[in-house]
Image 1 (cartoon, rainbow, N blue to C red):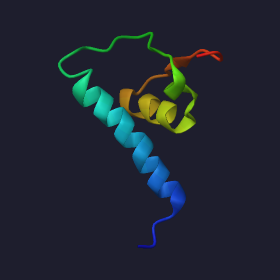
Image 2 (image 1 turned 90 degrees about the vertical axis):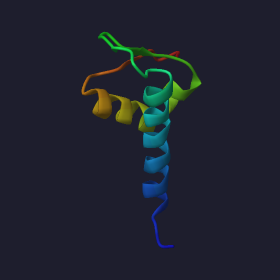
Image 3 (image 1 turned 120 degrees about the vertical axis):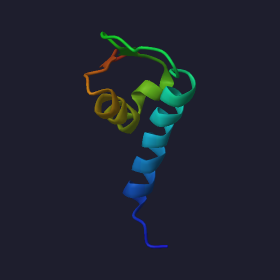
Image 4 (image 1 turned 45 degrees about the vertical axis):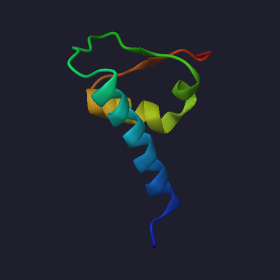
Amino acid sequence: MGYKKEDIIAGLCKSVVANYLNNVGKGKKINEPIVFQGGVSKNDGVVKYFNEILNTNVIVDKNS
């Protein structure tokens, strides 16, 4: 329908973060420091949206 691939991928990354925060993080206070680990932490788009939505700098280890 004319959407750029980059926009679709960005929407998917943002939805992964929103889904996590609305389900796993629901009703919980998320305090700093925040460490993001595992395979998905290698996805720069997901990390970007965690940083933006939480208004912080999420720590990602280079080895996840």
